[in-house]
Length: 440
Image (cartoon, rainbow, N blue to C red; front, side, top):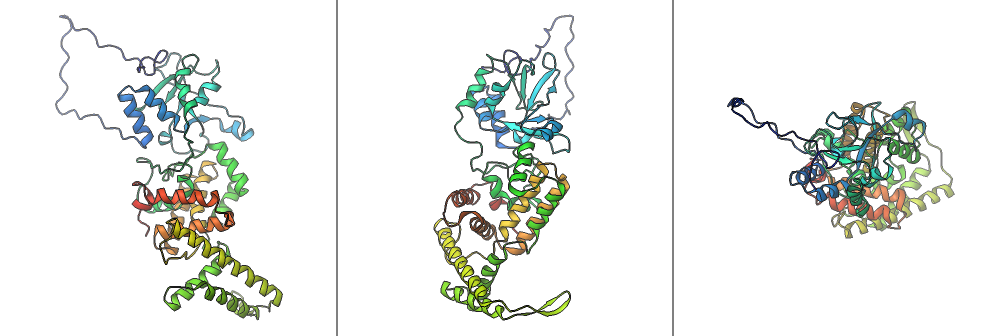
């Protein structure tokens, strides 16, 4: 199949050159100093693969790449806000197509920076053939105006040729893989470091880790996920969540107490901490605090009240149980390559800082913040991580432990195994930010 005129093939018609004649003088030679046209750099591997397939006129290969990609299209924001389940596409114009009307779709690397009123959704390749209606444009244009563009006939029976590729696609689009924006996304510096803190959240679903100008799962889905998972339905709630995640004292205080106590013991006794000694230290410290403590507050020196013995013993039992959970997770971490031998997790602050990086991008995708605001929050997440950890490996262990303590309950189910997969690719793929972005 070739790239011909839009109705019958999949590319713009190119008029043939005029036939030379005696009456036609030869065209003057171009000036010797004319610079060559700029070389186009595909933003991601997706656009690279599309360009290569188009260049060799490998239509099957081109459609296979599209079938393995999210295809974004502009939608009406007012309609999405009124009825999130009702998607109303906005069609475009291209003078190369008869009638001019087109349905423009974009691969992830070709999306524009988010704007307040311009929003996008995405679908798989075969979806466009299923929903096409006679009132829709006759031509779907992939990445219009770029060297990897293609013109697809939207109407059957022509659409059946490319729709079958989407129907046959077996690999899920949200599978774990490292994807990097070569253009349009930072590759080094403070913003890249902050984005790398959130990499587990985006690598897990096959989204570019460094897409600061984030569209993610599409405008309707980003709003829905923030509402369902975080209770965020507007700008002020987003700001509140962002502040809480960036708060250095915002992590679970019981988890941090237990890990902080072990850090103190390790510092005082040369590194290795026996679990029995750690449990006993929990009991000693908490019983010491039960008798009341003299503390300095903004209002002056005060003494905390004495805690009832039953309450203290219940607290000791709970923290000692937590110590057991932590040590069992760490043993599994070592077996799965997340922790080196004789290393332990120093803090679970990474769980908050990684999600703070994600929250900044989710807020932008939902249009609850601007791009500069999201970027500032991402940078602060990276700075906070650098204050709490020494390396990406330390950060990773803290993030995964926090996730497991929050969700997994020692079942070692998908909340854990998903992170094992993410850790493996982030510590091995050549373009992983945990291998290419400086932590400090």
